[in-house]
Image 1: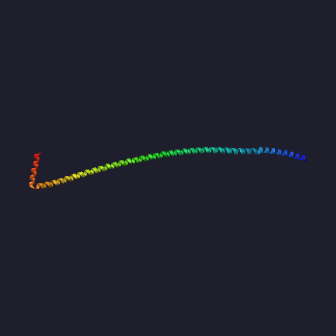
Image 2 (image 1 turned 60 degrees about the vertical axis):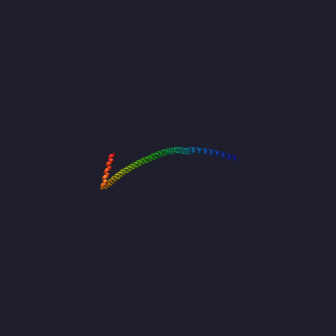
Image 3 (image 1 turned 135 degrees about the vertical axis):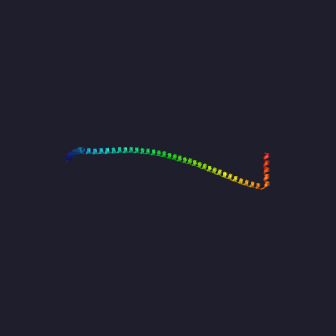
Length: 166
C-alpha cells in the first residue's frame, strides 16, 4: 500500500506539475500579456502624470515670476505717476503763489496810485480853498483899510517908504 501511495503521490505530483506548467503557459499566453500591458499602461500613465505635474510646476513658477515682474513694473509705474503728480502739484502751487503775489503787487500799486491821486486832489482842493480864503481875507482887509481915508494915506506913505528903501 505504501507503494501504491507512493506511486499515487508521484503520479499526483507529475500531474500537478503538468497542470501547473500548462496553467502557466495558458496564463502567459492569455493573461500575462494583458496584465503586463495594463501594468505598463499604468506605469506610463503615472510617468505622464508626473511629467505633467512637473510641467505644471514649471509653468506655475513662470507665471509666478511673470506676475512678480508685472507687480514690480506696476509699482515702478505707480511710483513714477506719484512723482509726476507731486511735481505737477508743486508747480501748480508755485504758479498759484506767483500769480497771487503778482495780483497782490498789482492791487497794491493800484491802491497806491489811487491814494496818490486822492492825495493830489485833496492838496489841490486845499490849495484852492486856501487861495479863496486868502482872497477873501485880503479883500476884507483891503476894504477895511480903504474904508478909512487916513488909513489909505498912511498905507500909501508906507508903500512909498518901502520903495525908497529898496
